[in-house]
Structure formats: C-alpha cells, structure tokens
Image 1: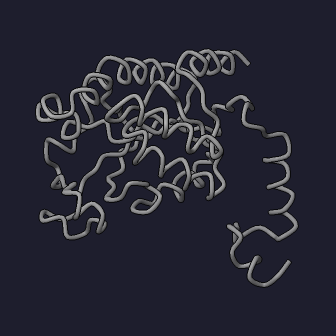
Image 2 (image 1 turned 45 degrees about the vertical axis):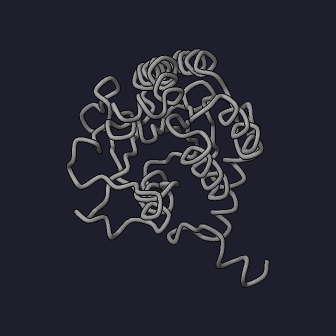
Length: 233
C-alpha cells in the first residue's frame, strides 16, 4: 500500500492496521445491493421535510412538488418511521437552517439560491405530520449534502451505523448529493424511490436513474416488509 493510500483510508486510531483490515473484510464480504438491512447497523435519514420547504408559497408556485410530497411522500415516510421505530432503527432528520441570523455561514450555492432559514424559525421546523420523537437527532445543514455541513458521518460511525435509508426532498438535489457522498464515504446507501420527490415526475425518474449505481433502490412496501422480517429474527 502506498503512503498516500494509507493516509487516505478512514481509520480507527485505537485499532491496529491488521484489526481494521479484518473488520472491513468482515463488514463487507457478504454485502450486495440487495443485502437485507440489519436494524442495529441502520439509520433512516429524513431529508428537509420542513415547514419552510413545503409552505403555502410552494403550494401555489410548485404544485407538482407540493402535491406529490403531501399525497405520496409523507404517507410513505410515516409508514417507514413507524416500521423503523418498531425495529429500533435509528431515525435522523435534517433541516435547512443557518447558524447565523443573516445566513453568512451558508454554502455559496445556498446564498446564490436564496436558501436561508434563521435559527429557531418556523420554517426550519420538521413538518408536524412526521415530527421527531424524543431523543431523535435533528441536524441543521447549510449544503445540499449533509455530509458537507454537519458531523453526520462522525455520528453514524460512533453509533455503529453503516447502512443509511434515505427519504425526503429533493430527489435531484439534496437526496442525490447525499446518496453519492454517502457511498463514497463507505456507507451502504438505500434510496426509497416513492418517499422522495422533486418538481416533476420526469426529473424524479431521471435522478433515480442517474444515481442508481451508488445505492440500492427500493419501495416503501419492500422496506417496511424487510424491517418487519428483521424484527422477527
């Protein structure tokens, strides 16, 4: 192994190189895209389903996005949340929220795009229909991929999570970026195809096709059944 490759490897500083190699081999040897989730190693990540994104303005100006979110995505996310909690799968939420009142800490892209919710503002709250329960994490992000503006990867490693089930909005923006970044960082990514949406069905399907190579793609029905099956083991 070259010195460059050695220092680029994610490493557990308290473990020998031989131990880390054995651990990685044990974790990944039997994995495939269709490997069933292991509840204690899995987290359900709910991306940006917040009041400021799905607002009255959105209802008027982005009707497909708003309608598909409330008619398809939210009911499916509720089912997944129920199944995940019953199976003791960790639930994590993200919301777009700046650390500063004027949003000066946001990414350049968010500044250009006008994405800004002040700390504690109503628009930064998770939708009431899928509100977090006590002791569930809510991470505030200022970039499309939460890996770039939160300590999410660090938290997941600490909690022993190597598989991430992704739901939320938008399919071709934050969901897309999160799936790709997570895959590159060594997480097994699962995108729930009917629990995310964007501004048109065409954009939604094109996005799913574009990042298919970075994740497993499954429906809500498939994953709810899988969560239940694992819960019986």
